[in-house]
Image (cartoon, rainbow, N blue to C red; front, top):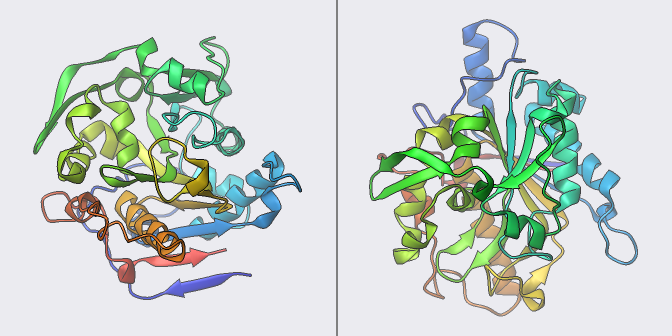
Length: 333
């Protein structure tokens, strides 16, 4: 069943969403601008019970179909390849930023990452120009990823393999060195967080995932991460290179995070897809709170962990996206 819920429109003029790419977006600048405005206010929630077998194990092909359906609905195109070609050119080096901190059970699933790799390749990007990465090799290994550094193949490694930038990036209250994978090696990023509760900042999703790209995330968890998470996302390399976010909500967690706590995990069997990281986080917050309520838990605000950094990311000083869900076009498939 497909349900399209369109409430209001809002154009994030001057927002942190970077639209200098979209090589496959045909037409003149006016047409391109109109297309970009449409995408800036759109969010897709795609779910399917078919992604698991009878034992609850993920089926890679079905996860790939789910991702393709989400892409087609997001771009309004028939055929996922056309969508991926709107994001990347064969000259790009694409980094897929995943989240492996919690190890097996609550890290970005390989089935989804493999589907993204195939999508990026369908845009003409050579496999050797794709890097699956996170903060450290040990985290990737803990989550079941095998480190690969061969220059002629798909690469998988952590920032500890290549180090951090010499330049200190600063905005507001944040100052950090950034991963050289992000700064020096990649021309484009697909952000692939996992949807879960966070015991300090409320929740971790699209914005918080870039704490895995800085050298000092331990400094920025006070005050529920506000304004630090928003400030880090203002760093130019993150704003300008992040072209898409695909939230892994195949298995999500509504309490006890960031470590994996199976008693509070649930098979959401879905992904969230969009370009507006603020809107994705605002919607993720709604999902987490709904699940907490049905499980007899207080909301994040009632628990003293309101993720106010999402609101800050949308304010006049940041303008990274839209936190008012009434102004977002939500497509549920």
